[in-house]
Image 1: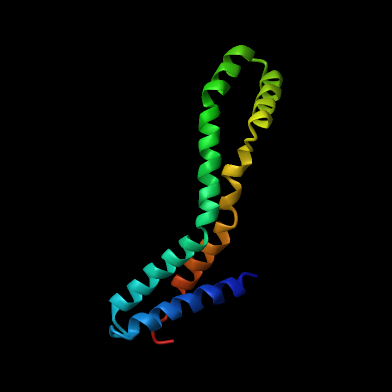
Image 2: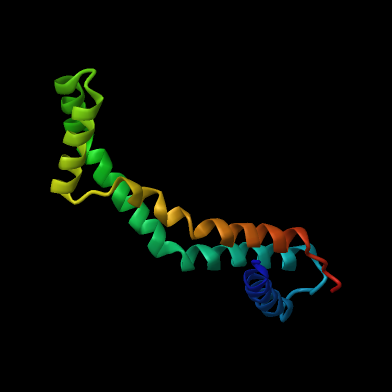
Amino acid sequence: MLDWLYTAIAWVMKQWHALFSTFLDPASGITWALSIVMLVVTIRILLFRLFIKQVKSQRAMQELQPEIQKLRKQYGSDRQGFSEAMMKLQKERGVNPLAGCLPILPQIPIFIALFHVLRRLQPGA
């Protein structure tokens, strides 16, 4: 199902390995280690915008925490009233509580593919 992603990640790693092989021994561990490190750096750069969105959303939720605590005190054990007031507060401030989690979802298959490629790595192949 994710074969296309495995292939893409393996290709990027192969390109990094080819680059490092120009000035290092292609069979040495340092060449492979550097290519793996640069593969991870490449993936993190590609996913950087999602990371920024996640951080912004988490900061916005942290800024709301004092007001959420006030609402908790105000509503006490009335969960429905608290939920409605919290949804209203989030809507007023333009904060989406799921926005902190959603950017993580596209990263999951990418890092699963990275794990798959590294697990199947055969230097001679």
